[in-house]
Length: 81
Image (cartoon, rainbow, N blue to C red; front, side, top):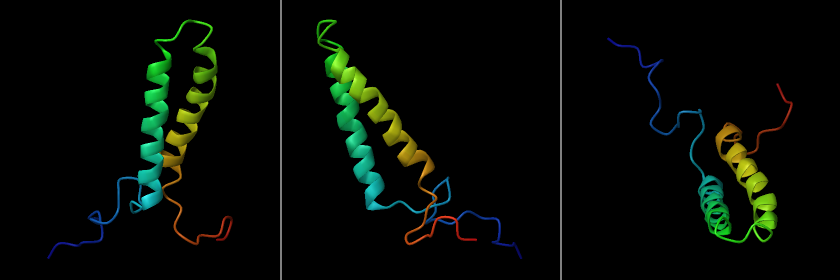
């Protein structure tokens, strides 16, 4: 009989946490920020500075949120062992 101990759970994602509504919101927000960045590339050089200045860090922070903060469980206390 095979051991199921090493088989991945269907509820878990590749990073080890279940998908929640806040992740879908972050993906939608990332799509809006990336669309704004894409639109700003058509602006004249002086006009695209502000959208790029705010959009690039925003996109990076949203990607960090989605990719690296998914392991935190609901109600998890930071630093608790």
